[in-house]
Length: 305
Image 1 (cartoon, rainbow, N blue to C red):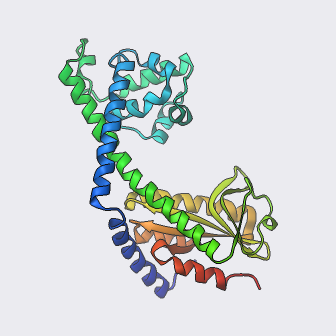
Image 2: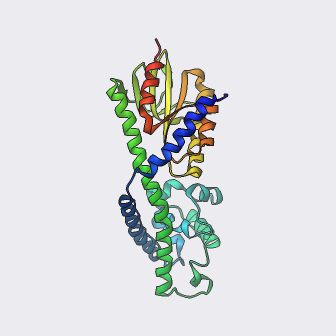
Image 3: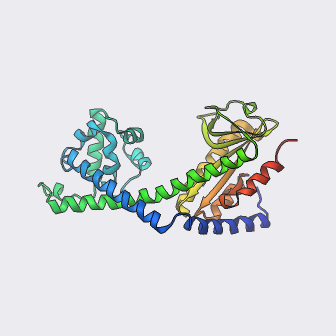
């Protein structure tokens, strides 16, 4: 869909404003407190994993007790791998098992242990290559390195999570203040399930494949629903992933629902304009958290008569 110069200029300016608002969104003291807490938490977790695995000599045994140790172990790899990356490279790995901390089968534990030992960073685990017990200094260095690595990721995610929760809460509060009525349904299979001036939070739309979750669904009347995704991004790399997620859902919804579902994105944070442009070209209605009143006006203008 062609983008007018006026619309392009508007969203380019808003993406720059959003970056400034995001930088000021949480104080330096708040961010420092999150960082310190994350370091302390993961220093303890890293030490516990080293103890449970007998300093990495018996990884499988530790995983039989709890796959939660993988949150630490996958950061020992060279390079460290995300959950999705590890799942691609090691089929025995399960994100769900890591998240729940549940035990896993002996076969899977052995396969994962073998993968970790093959991919580990030798600079973090020199004692394994030399066939000896680690020194106290080596264990301290490895524990601290893991704590710093994981805390950096956790701190960035924590800021985004805090702002994302507020972003959704503000949008829901706006709808309530406008007199819209909230409904609840685990799955939308018919557009008539959501009438004009009704909305749902964290529901799912049926598609031709698997259902796709939407952050906020708004009934516009005449069986038309606005599916709005709320996205807060830390940086321009992160924005690519968030926008890809919106576009994937948009495609699935358009294929299954046609014009009965319209897609919108409520954006906040550091977002490259080229990614905003991808949304506009796909026909996604773009709103900004720092201009939430635009969303309110749009709803009024797009209610079916």
